[in-house]
Length: 111
Image (cartoon, rainbow, N blue to C red; front, side, top):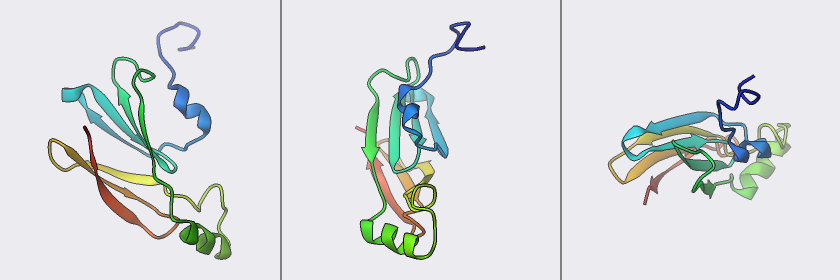
């Protein structure tokens, strides 16, 4: 209904089947951070398809292989699902992902 009424703008990046898990709204700077499977997106609040910035952050290959050897599904479990997006300071965000059952965290500079 929303698409038919032209009252929304779908995010085109979601067509990749990225399984979005967490969001961080930054109204002050007009952006939305979205954590997904192996990706972190920075979206414009006015038009989510304008000036999209994307970070590809997959799990290490050896961790993915260990995950598959443990009997987990390679497509739905053995990836780096971004679970935490937390403001750290005015220039950085603290980010954590599952890392194919070997969690990893880091800081992203939001230039």
